[in-house]
View (cartoon, rainbow, N blue to C red):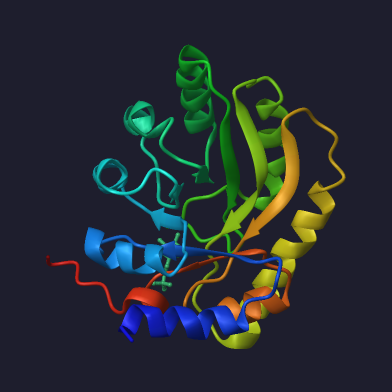
Length: 221
Ligand SMILES: *Cc1c(COP(=O)(O)O)cnc(C)c1O
């Protein structure tokens, strides 16, 4: 059995029924992705537009591509129509650009709002205090649909991680009360290779696992 198959088997044995596993394939080859595909994985995550575009062309069309990295406004038009879920909706200017392009294409774009739950200056995402205003703005953007929240928590101990996951779950629940068109809280995307078990314990229903499936990334290639 290959390493990828073995890793997948192990992760899947711990997955709760309601949790979607997104295989984060950034820097990984088409061959490696196909190994996971053959094991039944259909959700793949990429953080760079160009890489997503290239892989989109080469790989089976029933793959659901998740964009999990920062999206520059000038690259929006390249990914629309190719992504199943843009998980990194992190600012107003991006929302406006996605909406504008999606309107031209006559499509509805599914997104998650990225929340900067650790309030880290170097990280993308909407701050908790700014969520309400951001969501209100989205009410006018008729080509964007919000399906839930995504977070990349600060690095820390298991206990610290748990506290951030709890905060996210609380937000997720609170925002479930919002009654707005094209706005639902179905997906809570949190947890990566090192902390997905804790994330699931605290209510995550979408985990994003890269190295835990494909092994270490080699950025020099
Ligand atoms: C790279 C990445 C992951 C996966 O990280 P691993 O530690 O390799 O599992 C998950 N989410 C985002 C946003 C990423 O950029």
